[in-house]
Structure formats: C-alpha cells, structure tokens
Image (cartoon, rainbow, N blue to C red):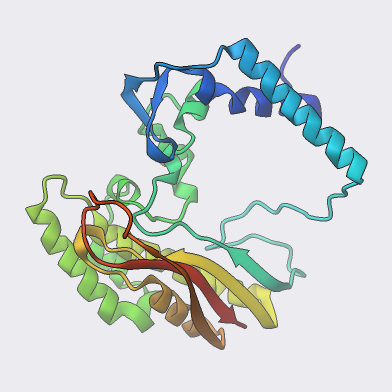
Length: 276
C-alpha cells in the first residue's frame, strides 16, 4: 500500500514503524537515546517480531480508548513560542511546560536515527536546518552551529533585567573554554537561552489573561563549573515582561548521583510558578 501522510491508517503505520527502529537496529544508542555512529548493539529484536509486538500494544491501547469512550477536547496549534502566530481571540489561563534545561541535551539529535530512516536528513549537519532553527537554543551544538556572537546576544533588550549577572557568567565561560580541550560554546549558549525564553515570556504576557498561572519545570546548570541561576533569572525575565510575581518550588537535587560528574556545583530542579 502506498504511504499517504493524509490518511489516518498511514500515519498509524508510520508511528508503528518509527517506534520499532531503535530496538530493531544495530545502531549504537548511548545514554538518553543519542546515537553512537561507531558503535553497534549486540542484542536486537527481529523487525517482524518487533512489528507484531508494537502492533499488539497499539491495538490494545485503541481498544481501551474506545471502551472508555475518550474524546479529544484539545486543539494542537503548531507555532514558535518566541514569535507565535495564533488566532487573535486566544486567551490563556494556564501554561504548563518544561523548556529544555540549559546544557542538558541536544534535542535536535534525539531523533536523528528516525529522521535518517525516513529521509528527512542525510547528515548530522542537516539537523541545523531541519530541526534546530525551531528549538530553544539550549545546547552548545546549537550555538556553535549558528556561530553566535556573545556581545550581540547580550545586547538584546529583553535581557536588561538579568544582563549584569548573565554577562558576568557568560564572560567567565568565554575565559574558561580557552583552557578546555573541547572549547565548547557554553558562553553563547547561555546568552541565547535566556534571550529566547525572555521573548517567550513577552509573547505569553500578550496571550495570558490577568490572573493566569504559569508553571515552568526547570533545572539550573553549571557548564564548566560556572553557575547559571536559571529559576531566578527566568523569574526576573517573566516579571519584566509584565507578569506580577514568581516563586520557585524545588522538587529534587541534581548533580549528586554520579561520581564521574564534571563539576561539584550543587544543582536543583523544580517548578517555577509565575502569576499573571
């Protein structure tokens, strides 16, 4: 049967095939689903067996949904939160989200195996055009690919409330990177990250009603051991955008589990609550 992206059954088949690529492929997968090009897995599932198993799981889910008489009451509106293009009559009461943590994960690389299989990309460099331009700039791979300039980033007017502290951290990162073998562009990544989210808050302020509530699940970061006070700076950016107040609810400590961690700066994760 010819694949037709407009048909529900074709989309379901696409989902099924995509979901079995990793367990069926010998491609090496590292922690958090990164692909290691020069590694291969020793244990894989036969593609036909994987197909049957996944098809049974999907069928079971569909039967459960039908039995429970679930109905979809949501509408998906694909847009860029930094410069959203949405119907003018939209008003928001509640925002629940978890933006990428700074220097935590290259989300563009997360589905490289699947995108390669379907012909969406043919090389690692294709990710920049096909994926990264639509993402918050939260990793050094992204900032390096865009060849960002630190001074230009810090000059962004949206960063005014946090510029002094952020600038100090970014310039420290620019110094430290010269002593490291990888010379990763954490300095421009950090500036771009807060710039992007500053613009997100400005966009949200225009869309959110008075009295609205925002919940951002966030984690702080310390690339090269330089601490980035993520929850505080994001809260200040939100208030500068017009929101009334913010507070942070810590849910767990981070960077305490692994003995081989690259720095000893204590980190945390939690909910950044913002009142509209």
